[in-house]
Every structure is written in structure tokens, then in C-alpha cells.
View 1: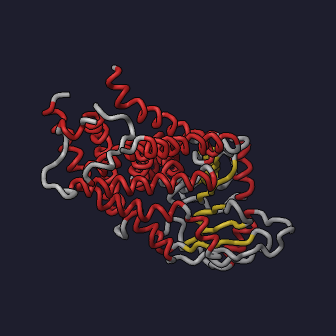
View 2: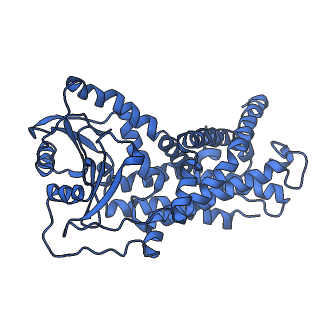
View 3: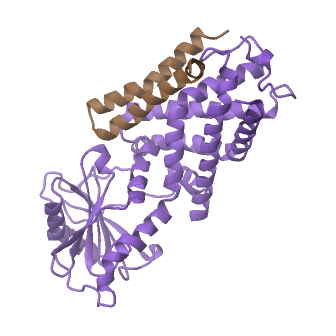
Length: 373
Length: 56
């Protein structure tokens, strides 16, 4: 590579890094406890709830719905979701099925008794950290901004790979010249730590960017594929006499054998049409567990209208979640995720130190004396 | 080509192993999780080794 080319890449590396480093430091620091979100919640005794009749029979989904709506008179059901590790069904209802988020009531119900389950208190320190990490309390604008920082970070990693080459021409992989100046030593650390974590950092970075696009991606599914299915029912009165939810779930499962129910969107809600139950099913392997497919069930007759494949972007979003969180391979994977996160912090910190001068005014970059072993 | 591999050989190898590690646990549980742990830990092992052996 010609020196002029290297200089350009070096400038790209410097400026993309400089703009995003402060945010990336925040993301790595808040991301660290979030890796263990579930474990920390458990340790804090977040969920001391036990079912009323652990060995008892489970209520049907229709019975659960009835119990939930009994406590919210006049409400229409919006969503029904299912806890994975406890016999709890969550019923979301509102004044109408199309009610805005602020008007929705989320009611977890014990499937062994029909009693309400105390909701897990929100607003703890982990929720604070999560929101800081997701959108810095700035809503969609904050999310998209962090997505842009993620893109800059990706550019910084790619340009980092290019400028890595001239440094390493005369050095063996992983050499740290600890007996030289602090600056040379930290340059070597920056290079070796960055090189080792390269693939992980790119995957976590790019999937993080995709996650920041969750709202627009979901909206594009709603206004595209879902709207197309809803079109024939436009102008018709919404379904009133609702068919059984249990039967709708069974019908959906018959259409997609071997899949489990993830959540049900009621007619008129944002995730269905005015005339259908949308029953979202997912597979049972770590991969297919994240890829939900909706079956649309006519809410009055209970008949299957269509099984829909989610669009590619929605699938990419679904797969970006585990790949970003590192929550799909047990505790050992989370510990590895944490180590890689800590190493990334050192790469960011050493990068900042090298830029700030590190005891020298003149940059060491590409001086032959510095690259000679 | 050998110059390229001298510079990028190790980083590319470690990246490939990492990608196997990231994909493995998505495909299945049990043995697949084990494969993931090994493949994500291996680059850290190499790192520990070079930081010890190539420090000067």
C-alpha cells in the first residue's frame, strides 16, 4: 500500500474512532452488567413469586383471558404472552384493542389459580442501565443516534484492520515491546487486543446497529406484509364475537407442527388485522426460537387464513438479538462475552491514550524506527 | 501473499474460530454450546500465550 493510501485510512481510523469512542465506552460499561441481567435479577430476589397450585391443572388461555378481563371491566384484549420458566400468562388489555401504549394494562395471571401475579417492579438500577444502553433516555432518536455511533465504530474497526498492516510488517503477531516507551507498548497492546477480538467486536457491533433499527423494521413489516393481509378486511366491522384463543393456538400449531406459541395478538391490535388473531409461533432450537412466524386465524370462525413468513429484515432483527446479548449459550458464554467486552474497553482506552499523545507530541505512526524489531 | 499471511494469518484464523463459536450455540444446545465455549475461549488462550511469549 502506498504511504498516501495508508495516511487516508489512518485519518478514517482516527476520526471515526474519535467521534464514537465516548459512546462506545458507555456502551461497553453498561453492557457489562447487562450480560448478566437475568442472573443479577435472580440474585436480587427479583422474583420470589411461586404458583398457587404448583402441581395443579393449568387454566386454559380462554379462562386466563376471562380472569384478566374481569379485573379490567370494559377492556378489550390486545396481546397475550407466555412466560418461559413459570406458569404465567400475561394479558395486555386497553380501552380498545388499538389503544396507545400509555393506555395499555399489563396483567400477569397465574395459570394454576387465575390470580394476578405481582408484576416485577420496574425502575431498578438494571432498568436504568438498560435504558441508558438502548437509547440514553431519548427514545427512538437516541436509539438511532447510538446506531449511527455503531456504524462509525464499524468503520473504525475496518480502517483499523487496514492500518494494522504497516505496523505489523516487521513484527510477529502479538509482540508487545514492553521495554520501549509507554506509547509503543500501548500501541502494541491496542493492536494485539484489537486483532484477537476483531470478529466478536464486528458481530456485536453490527448486530447492535441492527437492534437500534427495531422500530423502523417492525413498522415496515406492519405497513408492508401485514397491511397486505389486512387489506381485504378494510372497512368491514371488526370481529366482535371472538372464537376461542386455545382453539386458535391449536389451529396455528397444526399448521406449523413442532412449534411453540410465543405470543398472540388480538384483532385490532398493532400486530394483527381487525379480523384476525395473529398467533406467533417459534421453533425449539436456539436458532429457530428467535425466528417467530405468525399464523393469522379468523377471529370469528377460528379458521386458518394464512401462515406468514416474516420479511428478511425482521428475521435479521430477530437473529441480531441473541448475537448481540450473548444469552444463547449458557453462563460460560456470558463469561466469555464479559471478558471480550473488557478487552474491548482496553482497546478503546488505549486508542484514546494513543490519540491524546501518550507522552509524545509527534505520532509514532509508520516511522521505520518504530516498526523495526 | 506470504507477507499478507504473515500479518493477517493469526487474526484471520482467530476470527474464523470466533465465528464458528458465535454460530455453534445458535444451531443447538448441549454439544453445540460446548463447541461455542471452546471456539470463543481459544482466541483468548492464544492471546494469553502471545502476551507471555512475545513480550520484550
